Length: 467
Image 1 (cartoon, rainbow, N blue to C red):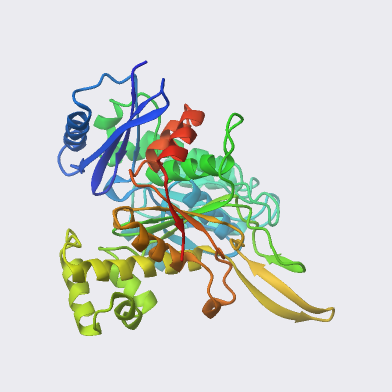
Image 2: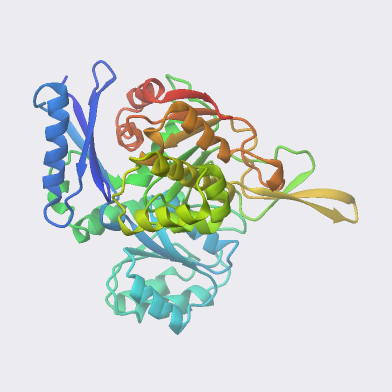
């Protein structure tokens, strides 16, 4: 049987992964700079050349599957009615579809909001609001505002079913491309985000690939092309749940620290682990993704420092604060800077530690004690990750580190007494995506889930327990 090729057109690098389906094994991986400014196929050809050099010659592929986060990835804006309800449901739908959510609006959009949306120029606008049979005025008013924005982006309507046709008419009369799907919250506190996610991926294929110059590449692809984060989410869910033929690993979290953002994934229902605890807000999806757009190892290194404080970075790195500020200036001015000195290695390790800590703290839920007429009680917001015992680590800044350094970095994802309200994992084993295959396995999972799971179980390397 001929091998299968998976391609990830990243913002910086194009990564290729070859798999032998007959033997169910990874043949090899390679990467090259993504040539989005010229012809994206040039970067692909360069990556394939490196791969074939590793493997001893060119391969004849039975199929080629691809995902992409090139040219900024899938950039979305969402609007809803109440921040904690429909607006949050819209945000979760967008994130779960692999989007980078640039902004989420609640209540009525204003003229200032319209100017901001026009400046952002999203790839897709997700318009939600109201449960079915509930408030119609808000979503209709927002449709009128969006219709008046002089920018070319499609609008996906996923709100009160009694208002969607009115919204569709308003938007189409303004020249906007419109798609309709099921309400992200048909009833109070009930999430229904899968239909919206499916439509977002349709729009990605139908329109966004062309807009980002990927249409040439898409002609080479045998099957679907999807956003890279959606592929990683699919891989994580498969690894957690398993298939009919193989058991998964159970509940887990994953951290992907990139140059510009940090992506977090959790595979668990996150139900309260403490007796007498009640949930506040929306129920959480089993497969959840969040993105910290202000935290990254190069483009967003200043965001890590802002969140953690330079004093903490100095303490972790063993460098004085003045030198840390100098190194921060260095890596933000030249984002291609590699950690090729002892100082930069120590500084990068401190940054990665705080990126993991900040990202997991934001992703995990919290619990607080309240007092009621019936006595003491606990209120949980978000997911309880305290019982999760596996952390998947990926991202260029982490996968190339020494095992003891990676374990140390991963330990910052764990619960500590200084943040008593946080519901982060208590203890966890560290598994590292050393070959950077998660997005590839997410693609493969759409066609050969058992083989994708088998490869992940083999290729994810255990680095032991986070200390």
